Image 1 (tube, rainbow, N blue to C red):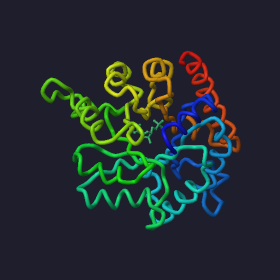
Image 2: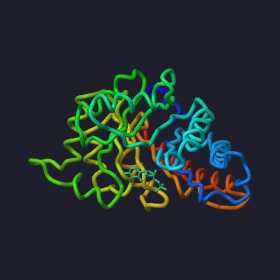
Image 3: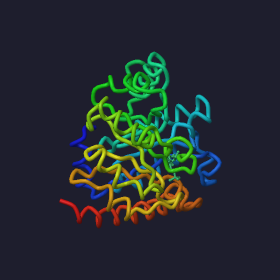
Length: 274
Ligand SMILES: O=c1ccn([C@@H]2O[C@H](COP(=O)(O)O)[C@@H](O)[C@H]2O)c(=O)[nH]1
C-alpha cells in the first residue's frame, strides 16, 4: 500500500487505528480451543468484527514464532485473510548485517521466495544503515524503524545524549537520509507524549506507528493533537485492550466495541485537521 493509499484509507474510514494481533493461545476463549487452528479462528473473528474500523493490522511475530511451524501457518492464514484495504505490519523488530537482513526482508516481503507478503516490517536501527537498507530494496514495502519506544527501558539508550542530540533523534535524522516518507515510518510510543512535538518537527511527513494506548495507558487525544498531519500521518496501535476485552462467547463483539470507541475518538480528532 502506498503513502497516498494509506492516507486515503484514513480519511475514508475516519480511523488511524492499527489493531495488534498479539494472539496468545493461553488467552483464547475456551470455546475456540476445539477449532483445528484456534489462533486463526480467533484472528478471523477479530478481523471480521473490526475491519471497517481499522486501517492496519499488526501481528506481533513473537506470538506466532513461539508456536513453532504451527504458528507460522496461523500467521500465513491470518495475513491472507486481512482485507486488501488494510495495511499490514509484521512487528518483528529485525535488523542484522546486510546479507542476513536481506533474508529477513525476503521472509516478510517476498512470497515468490517462500516468504510472506506484508506491507511493512518493524526494524531495530542499532546495527546501522547496512542492516536497514536491504528492507528498502523492495519497492512499495515499508520499514518501520524503532525510534522512541513505549517501554521504560527506552531511557537506557534511546534517551542518552550523543553530542547534543538524544540517540532517538539521531536515529530519526539519519534514517531520513536513507529513505523517503513513502517507505519509512518511525515507532514512537504513546507513553512518550512529551517528545511528540519535537519528533513531528524532525519528521513532518513520516507516518508514526504509535503503540501504547490501551493496556500501556497512553493518551489517544494527546497523541493525536501532537502527531496528526494533513495526510493523517499516524497509525495508533492497540492490541490487548481490543483482543482480550472479553474471553467469552462475545469476545469479537466486545473487541469491536473497544475498536469502535477508539475509532470514534479518531474521527473526532480528524475533524480538527485539514
Ligand atoms: O515501543 C513499542 C514498540 C512495539 N510495541 C508493540 O506494540 C504492541 C502493544 O501492545 P498493547 O497490548 O496494546 O500494549 C505489542 O505488540 C508490543 O510488542 C510496543 O508496545 N511498544
